[in-house]
Image (cartoon, rainbow, N blue to C red; front, top):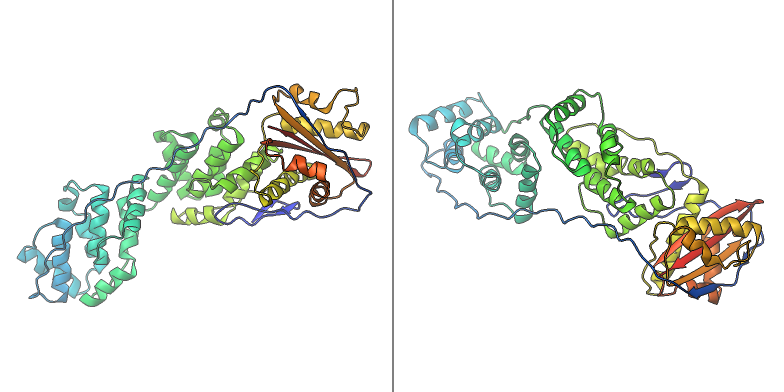
Length: 446
């Protein structure tokens, strides 16, 4: 899966973590500055809100296995099980005879007769909750008690809005139900749920996971109609929701935006590594359109669309500048070095990246830890509303790739000390090309 066209290749697998391959450019003489660190002022770090853990519904008590009459033939026993397990009562003589004759003569398949029982007026009049419905499906159509994980998954699907007909279809198309029908000497058959029902559930998910509200009736009807009739794809309707005016009014921080993409596009909570790296890439200037495109073009979103019976479609991934990619990569490689030495990773805070970028521009004019106006480098931090107690700066020029500059700093004891300092919690990286040379700055704060 491509992350940013022509700039980088990303492999997106479950964890949504990734690495960059960055092409080298012609080399120049490289120079590292002396490191510098000072103590000053106060530090305020903004911590984004976390999302709650999704609800998992309780597992109900299992039903007792009913007795099947041994005097009945195989087809009659198949019908008797439907009476006992679905309707919760013994068969009546006339009903047993008629349904058995229908199956024996091939007028209906096992799936069709099972449907007639599960969606009969008698069964629908029973007060059956989602847990009980799944339990009955397992015992009737799979001839076994539900496994705990499977039951929770199916019950959660019902609570998310999946119609009972669609859950029923999954069970009658199973190998286990096929075995039951074979043992009874009847054709299994198939069942096709009504069209559009799952598309309606897909649209409902978008309202809830992206806009955090139930759908309005007209909007739900219009978007469902558009999906069912092929006017929009899963990717294009998701784009309309994610970049709607209503979504924009939520004013989400990068971390919150990425959480929404995980929940809505992948149907799961973000893993820690993926959340950190996608959010960091956004903070370094990657567009939300590009990050969104990476999610909807993923295998996981494709599988979700197939589950709902809709076409995924694709979103073109916009290119990202070398400056953004190189700055992000320096940050990422720095955290890898810190991990090697057992030091916690560095995040970033609003303003710190902008301050680092300004310092990089200044070093192209006056190569020093002193700013062009004679002030020390950390006077740049208040200009970007960055508070701190500890701060450090590394500067360099001439290195042709993030890996080269990070390795150079790590080979210098003073620069390495800044990069591995346990007092630091945040990092901003600046990269500027000037006179066919790359200039690099790291700004650290606590």
